Image (cartoon, rainbow, N blue to C red; front, side, top):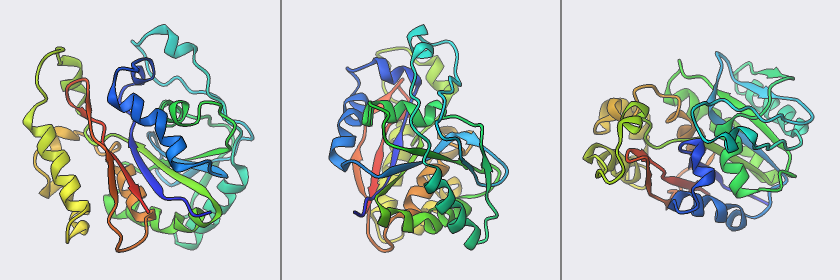
Length: 260
């Protein structure tokens, strides 16, 4: 069973309580569309570490790494079994590729991972491992991470990269319902889609210099870097599918891509 690698935008944690949002409905149906993987390796924007680090706990506790939202979110639990064997396999692949990965036997699962998974696979019975991003390193590093992890797909492992296509939180918190989406958001999302599906997808690696309003949409890079991992784990030379596009909180583009 060969599964694709997938990039999803997880948005704010409140997305879980907002069934009226198109992104909520999309994520709720995505698991059935993809099928049931043997295990899931999640690359989340909300775990930053200096070197690639993998979870190895036999069960991943729910991390509530947010505040100021509906108390119902802090009461939610998503505690899947840990994909210990997948962590070991991923560690071997990354080590072979020269990344010198580390493991964390105590870390649980952050909301960048469990929020989309709670919609995609709500029963929390599929083994999950997490891999950190290295926000001080560049897009090429993260693309190479994905390339190294690509063989996991042959074993039915879903490589799920979770970030946000745009992530200007300051603008999101200032947004008033009814205000239009800023042109900067649409321009950036269109550029990413045209680049990934066009003749020179490698330009994505230089998004900070080439994409319109890149710094406005990503004041820091951690929510963009998972997209590069998913892209690297895809089949070389095969254009991805942009399977969802919407906006939450006025400025958070919720685009998702499937890399076959």
